[in-house]
Length: 170
Image 1 (cartoon, rainbow, N blue to C red):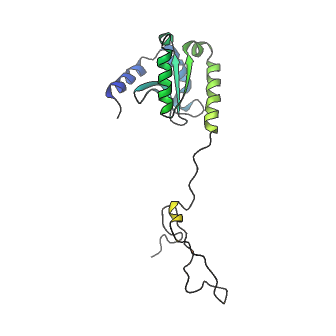
Image 2 (image 1 turned 180 degrees about the vertical axis):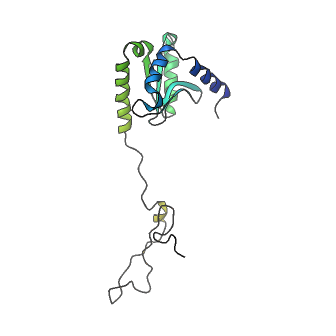
Image 3 (image 1 turned 90 degrees about the vertical axis):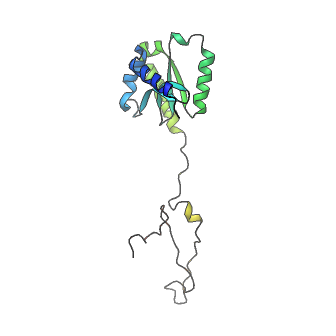
């Protein structure tokens, strides 16, 4: 469950964004960047990420002067976010204000790499129940034109588990 305190703090941070955060947000919001839906000041676990996307799972952190001397904490936080399944990228505020094109180019490269990782294997069209059903083979009768009387016809199941071609029949 999300902490109410963190949620309220994130809401306040969205209302009082720093200059570099606002500049980057204007480039990322509403799917403007690579069609990705980013959220700003998103609560992830016990942290608030500056910007985060679920597809691909990406966190963008902007580091200003307040991060000087806090490198160990930032490393710990990055490890925690990575353990939650996110790729974390950090940019300095000065890079956002003076080299937005470079920031967006680097971000596009990372997104391209994340999208090229192989997806999870797809399920078979018959679904997992297909392996659980007995799938008899059909042998032809002596006449060669119909199944032998003692054998069941081949049964195919749809992904919902119904027999293919049986829907709507009484």
